[in-house]
Image (cartoon, rainbow, N blue to C red; front, top):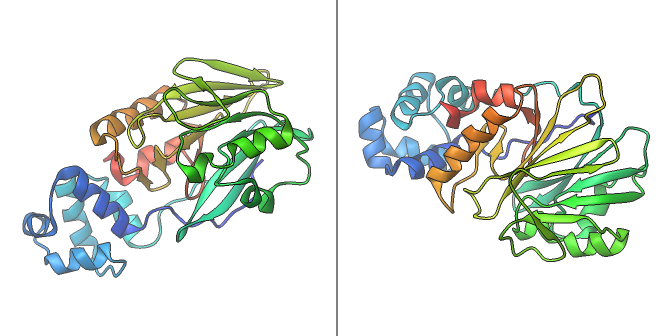
Length: 282
């Protein structure tokens, strides 16, 4: 069960083009020459003034190695958003302002229970409280995807407020008030099981978490992806672009295609949807 949301995408067309250009090492002049597009039009798109038609987007996708269908969908403002249904537990996305966008944290718990696991903590408890569901009275565990302030800044406050004894951060993370947890570890809390994947790339210390309800007869897993992958985009790979791309493909192959993705920014999506449309999975 996931409350409906109109959360905007983390990245628009210009953001995706800029990330792809950085990944390929192409500037607007060389990209424009290869794609037969005026460099000024590419710069306009990056500056959120896109005027690229479908044929130009197809040529850009070919040069940049992007998924053509997904890039054209972004350019048309119609990136596909799947129905988020079939989870065997409740998920409460907590959307908090961050710059001109939003950052997400997630509470995950058995439906009808007053206890939940928190994934990421926002910049502080004040922002978390604005969207906190009244039904959740106890936090049984906290998992941080990476140590950036907007994702981990509220960790110590949450640990103190709820008396949390099980707080986990990626191995090598500088996030305080948590203990390291890494690749292959599995943590169980009540009916929920959390499998840990170490996914360096955007940050050197970064985890993704796959949440399951092993006793449930049916239902999708939930992949808390942090800043690894978003609906319609991916992280910038500031630590290592090559490592980031390997980790994205590894994690999406390691989990069921039916898995729901709960990213650190933007709306929820599914593995199946991103494999089909995400521009960076061309």
